[in-house]
Image 1: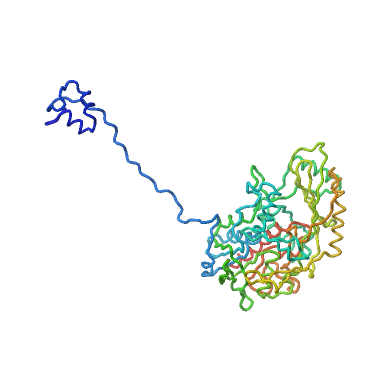
Image 2: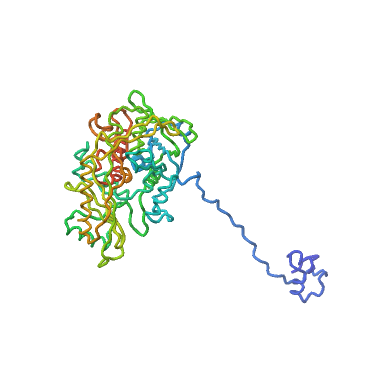
Length: 513
């Protein structure tokens, strides 16, 4: 009902609607400006008053990452005192880091790790969709921007290459993960049984398994029946499922980040281990612009590589007659053949004929369908005369002397090579495959199975570390890469490297409990 002084025009203004709308709703009122006090007026329906919306703040994390892994500047690390400082992020260094973080958790033990190289890829290269095949991966791996062909200046070891990057050569390794057989531990300071639980743990963490396809079952039966009863599925660190999850050391780093805490610097070149009265005190590290930093640590774990670890120890004047000596690898033969199409299904081939006490070599047999590749690795002797040493006439950009290598195969090693070459015919015949024509071996170092230059042992005259990886001459200084392995037999060394690194980490943990 209209109030005093109301007209259709004032009502239209009040409700903010056109006058004509009010007029059309009220035909009983014949003038829009006339006072209509007391008259019933029809008004248009009003839309509901819109409700206000409260916006929640986005759930952003408190911190920000500039890279796919947290990084700490060297300048900041130089201000800290570390309980443990690890040098190198390959298999041994990353396995040590993971185990320390798993066992110590958020206990307050301060752990640092430095890597000479930069960030390259965050996973094994075969997990990268654009590097889907072994041959395509090799095209990337062999780029001088990715790997360093150090063998070009090593006449007696021309096949050597290193990867300076987070994860090291595990970004490109072949994934084959057998154990060193128990009978080969006669030359070790520890028995196989001591390492067995660490083998179990390493295989679990690396997802080591075999590919039990129908074709592999057929070929296994053929090998068993033709004189190779120990043949088995190839143990690969793949983690089989809908998608391959090929293992690299970055998986250890990720697990370490989840379970504990540490500080990581890349592009951090360790140039000297600092000691005082036979005890480690820290590491001198240089940045790419050659700025020098002193990082203090109670325990230092070196995991540079079979070449870089003795290089660092020698440049740091760490005492030890065996440092750099007893370099071992494998004599390595790779050749191919074909299976007869009859009864063969299109499937992958992934088999292993392991080394035995009477056969000092190992067969890795891979392929697809009728195509087969034999990778045969032979045992070589650990000899003092095969060694890495500093070449003081050549220095790198950081002022560290380059390495030189003295290496040769012994008569015993060459006899093993001849056995490998002769055995291919028998293996091929047993698998009902064509006999390979070429039988040449790879140049020393090309297989990347280098080990032994800082071997563990009980005698400081013939070894560099004790049974736990601690350097005989220097308290608090440990080694956790393949250089500590006194013997790798005919077996790919990475699994054993991981197992010994975890064991070394457990020994270090005991010092903080």
